[in-house]
Length: 638
Image (cartoon, rainbow, N blue to C red; front, side):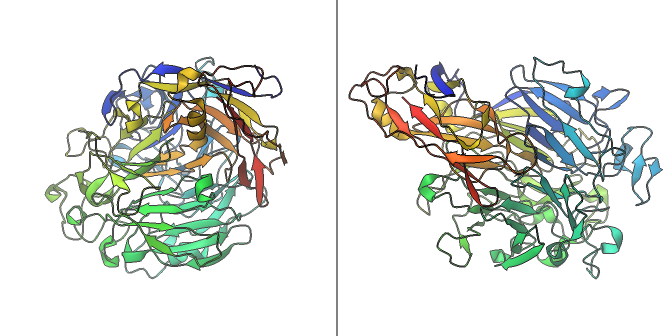
């Protein structure tokens, strides 16, 4: 073994265990409907619902939190104090997760809780025993089976009397920053379908129901400030799409407007409007993701927007409900790419991309380890949200889909290849169809074995298992096409942390991990970081894919090794020093020259030039910390 390096990655080979590529497999009950999900570590997925009448109980009240064990596919309820309905969430640098805001306390039927707060929503409910979540900050340190899962350190910390936001926020955006802190943008104070009255004569405040400010967590003395973009996009700005850029500024998109935002100085630079009047934020709920950052695209940050809805402005209605029968209005199939900071210095502009294979509202993008993008879930018609009426249907009894404002569940996923020629980027060949409707309040997340966990769907004010689109507890796993491989590389000895700069580390692949020559395998091997993000409302806040080199904020991520497009199992690593603040940096190490094998046999030996080992010079990761800095040099040994 080569002893000159501090970190190693050794790979072995295991069978794919007969998991059918392109298929869905039901994997049990989540106990609470999965409105929100995130991967806590290699063992556990954490699930949050809104406070509602779930049959599963904890401490004498319905549960709205759970942890799902990946190995056993069993869920265990967790106690959550405040109402997490339509909260936002994000990772922290040390691997913890935090959720922000939510709704006031509610009781049966989703009605305001038995005790009211000063804003007119619920402070507490005597039956469901949930507290007001509109200012809540809830923190979780993910645990493993080696911990005592019932201990306080493994539970949600949820006490607004100790830690809370400055403003009430429901449907707010959350984006991690270069120092590991989080910016929170906008949201409802009280509300319902869209964040406005109609006519929209008070775009900033909506009579006290809208929140047009931003704030930071941790605040560190910074007070909430007005964001003009939230006023401009009034009504259709819930869960705004946000992406930290290499420049240290941020792309923000809502309604049909787009800006680059200098959040430090609160300066907005307008970009072109979204073409074709397609709204991508909730409740249009298009699929949105940053394309993978790779050397071959010079780590250029490009955002893909697909689907959503192009209803005329009046049709969106107001807080109560839409003005039209949305379930009859086809969702958009339009896709657009945007590079906010073009490397050649040209003006940013939207570029029409291939249409999706069908229109989707509530379609969700999952970036896969092989660099392709899965779209899953959603409906052919309508929007997210629920209501008891519309401007065209006054009586709940006449609503054809219960409270759902969408129809036509899309059970078939599709895969987008960002590197394919234009006109051939979408395919659903070989992909199966789920028989479970995944509409409003569905979620999906990448698992460490590179499969995708799919759960939730609940377009109802409270638990309803008899309506057209019921409260859903069944979970599924979708197996992407790379599960056709009979063997996959499986890392061992993965580094637990990756620093910003410093010494490189080595990754070793034995001969059993690939077919053909070692040289060909080395040329096709990539090492990537994938952060699945916080999944809710057809979006994954903080989702990123990076082939080791460029912009990546501190915190948890899965490290995958791909050989000819087949990923290993991912291993959880922490990028950075695990603390909020300016990240320590160091100069990048000088890597040795690539040495190619003169033999087809490969073993791990003490010499990289003995004909039995191929050394592939690695690359480095950068992050936007006071500009672009180097992170994590690796050296791949095959």
